[in-house]
Each structure stands twice: as structure tokens, then as C-alpha cells.
Amino acid sequence: MRTVHSVIKRTPRKYLAEIVLIDDFSNKAHLKERLDDYIKQWNGLVKVFRNERREGLIQARSIGAQKAKLGQVLVYLDAHCEVGINWYAPLIAPISKDRTSCTVPLIDYIDGNDYSIEPQQGGDEDGFARGAWDWSLLWKRIPLSHKEKSKRKHKTEPYR
Image 1 (cartoon, helix red, strand yellow):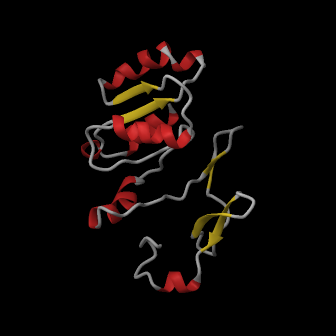
Image 2 (image 1 turned 30 degrees about the vertical axis):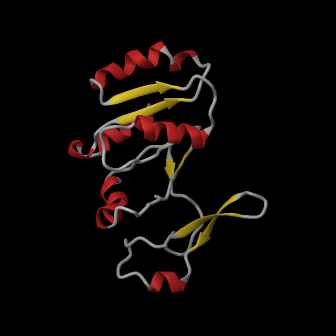
């Protein structure tokens, strides 16, 4: 629910059409009737759909896309995310210029012990990096090259 609360609190209401939650066949009791009752406070803005069997992350996201009916842009967030202040505009701006764009934010780290937020580690001297898989299928952050950085007109411009 931290994800849902942060999205509602930190997204301009005119840009927030609906929040779709997908329960990927969870067996956790608190994600059933208790969750249904809790989300009623948002009068239909937050919706829960439950898969009839475990589908996995990518298929659950595809199902979520099919269930989403109201917005113009889909934003996928995992359940363990929290959006920051002013998160929406920089993420959506490239899409508003080219609807075929796909943007990916940097995701900071939330410490599971004290819930403090730390910037994602790695990247270049400015913190810029690309995400990549290595041959062992481990996710890595690769610093942005000077060549790629020099192509940008300003520091907040997206990169390939």
C-alpha cells in the first residue's frame, strides 16, 4: 500500500486515471477481503483484479494492461516501490513528445529495516547509468558513456 499511497499523494490528480493492482494468485489473507475493504476509501480509483492461477511478473503486467481502461499512459510499478516528489512529469515528458517512447526511471533503494531511502548505487559521477543483464543473468548498472552524455542538451534529457 506504500506504493499506492505515494502514487496518489505525489501525482497531480488530473493525470491519475486509475490504479490497477494485480493479485497474482496470492495465498496471503491480508491481500483478500481486507485489501478490498481498504481500497474502498478511494471510490474506484484503485482497483484489484485477481488471477485465477499464478501467472508470473510479465504475464501479470500484461493482464494489468488489459484491465486498465481509463488512462492514456501505462506506468508499471512493483509492489515494493514508492514514487518520489515530482516523479511523474520527468517520466512522462518524453512520451508526450513521442508516444512510441518508453521511459524507465532510476529506482532508489528502500532499506527494509528502517524504511530509509537511499539513491541507487552505481553509475557515472552524476549517477547516470543504463540497466543491463550480464551473461550470468545478473542485473547491473553500467555507467553512461561520455559519448552518450555529450549528445544531450541538458542534464535531465533522457538517453538511449
